[in-house]
Amino acid sequence: MVQLFGAAMGSPVSPLVADMYMEFLEYKPRLCKRYVDDILKILKRDAVEGFTEHLNSIDETGSIKFTYEMEHEGSLPFLTFS
Picture 1 (cartoon, rainbow, N blue to C red):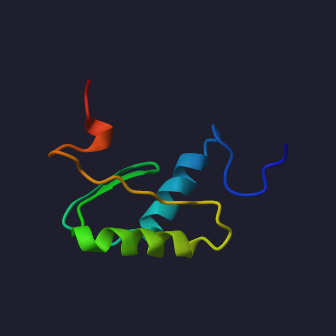
Picture 2 (tube, rainbow, N blue to C red):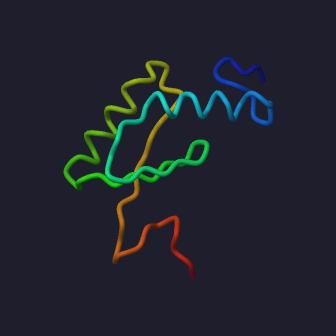
């Protein structure tokens, strides 16, 4: 298989390219935390869907897709412990 888009996984340049691209997409919300390609942002509930659509419209190739998960019962899905 030939990779036609982006930097290769495991390449020393991949984290740098990912970091630069993610900074390009960001703006200043109330809280923003990021690690490589994971982002935690605090937005108003009515702005989440529109913001996600905006991010997904930037990459015309459709190779990068942003999704979101809302808090449920006071906790974030990826921070839930069982």
